[in-house]
Length: 68
Image (cartoon, rainbow, N blue to C red; front, side):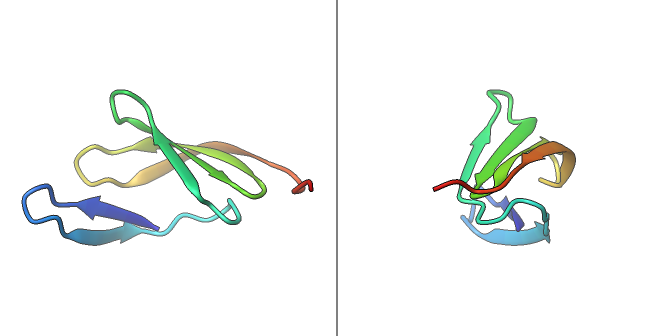
């Protein structure tokens, strides 16, 4: 799920839902905030991030079989 964060009030607002990475647990942003990288139990996905709305556009993913 993607949320916008209001820096003045601290409120979160739903923007959209992205799918494809199971168990997404880690998120990192590029230094300029224009890219988001999401790691989960079955892979890593990269997204372009709209700085105005927070909306994400998929740039691709590497998805595999989880290992133990």
